[in-house]
Amino acid sequence: MTRALRKTARPIGDRGWAAALLLLAALFSGCTGAASSALPFQPLDPPPDHRARLVLYRADILASLASTRITLDGRELGRFSNHEYESILLTPGMHVIRAGLRGFGFMAWGWNSHRFRVVEGETTYLEISVRLAGRNNPAGRELEIAGRPSGVASENVFIALRSAKIALPRLEMTTRLSRAETHPN
Image (cartoon, rainbow, N blue to C red; front, side):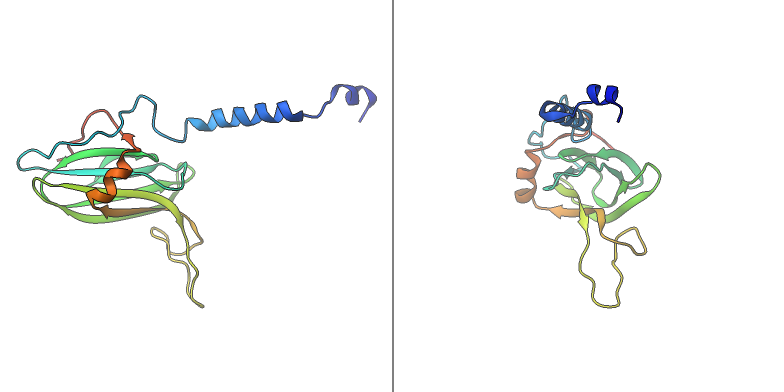
């Protein structure tokens, strides 16, 4: 370095690193959860006559920045981030939910679908989770990941039917995906 440049160039120091970390935290804080104006989970009324209620929620133990695109019976419900839920009134019977992750805006990382039945007058709870999907493979076998013919361990989406006993404590940490209740059919 030249003598003039050496005089002006200074190491970042502790304050500089702290400021850089605060700036990074501020940049990424908008990506990590629901907006502060979102409604927190409240106990739900039983569904009206001739209807069933689906409570769909995402409450990952290990946080992921990935949002999950959800469709129900072919109609898009929205993108769920961690700690979000939605309550949907449905006609009783069989339904299909599909959950997908997106990578770089154009490439799907993983997806999953689940057929389930809702019963008139009852509430059904489905948990969506995003986590690392990988396992030790027996010799000569490839890793199987939903939505891919083969690959390596990566984030993937899982759908699980939960009892009210399991779902309700997890729902206490969530906020509503949207303000208006969705009525897909």
